[in-house]
Length: 536
Image 1 (tube, rainbow, N blue to C red):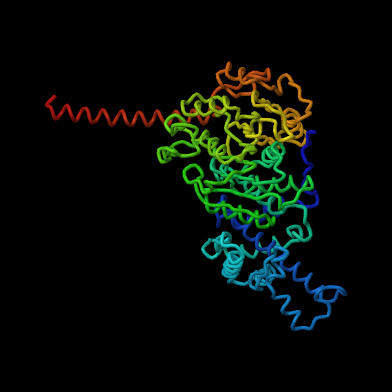
Image 2: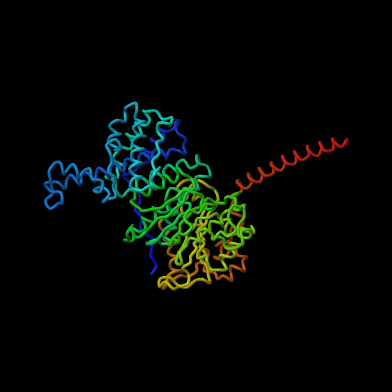
């Protein structure tokens, strides 16, 4: 039976961060670049949450001294002190025992002192050492950044006092996902400050949730090789919890090329008590998990990367479907991402990928070769074309590719479907929350995910819907030149082209033309010089 998308709790109306986070931005404005706001804010909140968890555990231990039947009931003062200082008592609850100088209370009490920037950085260094002792991979999660910043002591005090408010307390608001919401606020609010690069690590929450609802990562190894801040992993955890699963049933593997972003990812996962292995590196050229076979892959790789240097790949790279010169192109890395994901899927693995629309239609030799290979060999399970304006950080229209090795119908849950592909045209779904931004509502997520599940699952009641969904045979796809635009199949007008907005394309063409003019002028000078040297 098809599972309906899990109900996700919406932010509580009485915990509205908008004003406070805008106030925090005002504290930072002028001293910190907008694209760095999140680094300062989220680092402070990370310290606050670690400190709160330490205080909760310490209070639990202190209470146990007076509870009949407790292991520590009525022990003497010296033993009480030993219990409170025992690292294992905290580690048993996945909590870190903190020295007073690294607690939020210590920083709050000293917020008005002139050396507060020094004290904050010292707390960061202490905490980073404590984290690294628990796991060497956590080294570098907290970087001392306040002393070298242009922030004044007054501005830092303003941040500490602001985040000391009750609404930023994880104790008082345990279900509100404070950290995730604050992160999304800053990335969304100041996305334009990041430029198009922000899209490399921020995927809108409704898109992440759609991917997770479709592939249902309840247990097993979950991989994201462009993991950014870890949003895919966090949403996977929410899915597991909403379906009564156990966080210990999933294991997290990720790779991210930007060190600062990877630091935020580790903070994000640490706060959710998830076990993880996330590494630094360019996944295209430096695969840090060569032996990993994942049960689920979720990814929003940067779109349309050009000049990514495929010539650096070894000729026998195990990820490639064939000869390097036939299955790569220096002009676009989109289809190298697909080959990488496929290589890392287990024999029952499924991948969900956010991709630029151009990947559905591109005729570039290397890309078309990969797409045709994927289609002919039954790798593509489903294509979802999404509406515009879902992303603040890029105007490039996007789609979802669902790839699966689990299409033979032998797992007892899903039917055999290797000879067809499901196409969903979701361009008319979602609603505009502002003039520039669209989001998927719950009903949109449910409609898309349920359509996919009804088609994929044994006993499903799927039926084609004119203008929305169509299960097309591979023969139909081949007859359409291996184009994967859903509009070609569901009965609505296909959106042809490479998916790049006119403004961006015109800018690129203009720049290329200017470059050619410069080269032409330089060539003209050289020709005249040669003629002069010959006496003409």
